[in-house]
Length: 149
Ligand code: BTN
Image (cartoon, rainbow, N blue to C red; front, side, top):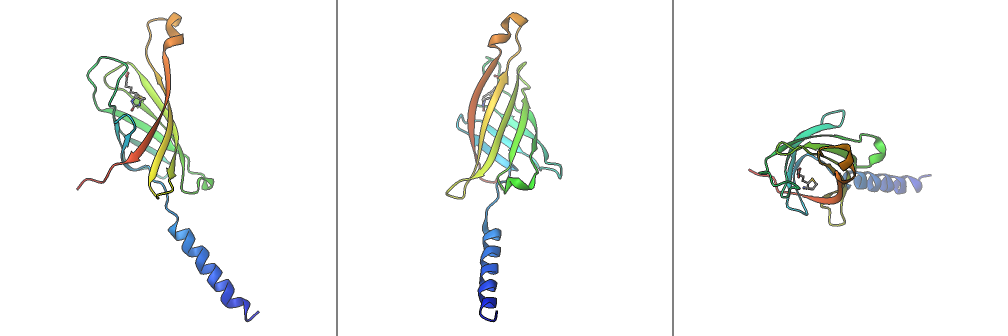
């Protein structure tokens, strides 16, 4: 028992230190994706809900690209282990379309945060006959932009 005490103490401290050092992925901040699109996510509230803005680098339309609002929510379950799943919607301010993104916020092997997402872009079409061609699908990978002074 006497010998076990220091061992248990070291084990406890090691586990505690490990728990403290595990980096968590946070959605808040500025991000850029593989297309060069930029997005800013404002504070995530206690329910996991958040808002922000999106500046796409590309468009399926010929309209002039404008900054567009986004709204989303983060999964708050304790099983997320610092790498939460999330979803958000971008309501494009310069087109008739809507995009929904779903993804997970990871910390990669270099300790860098990365958002792995899939999206559905729904365009407006004139009639139900054109519904078949109204939805595009893809993936985007976002990395964090440095904080501005
Ligand atoms: C539109 O073309 O009607 C609105 C802009 C759509 C931009 C898409 S959303 C998915 C993909 N990821 C981006 O960052 N931009 C494109």
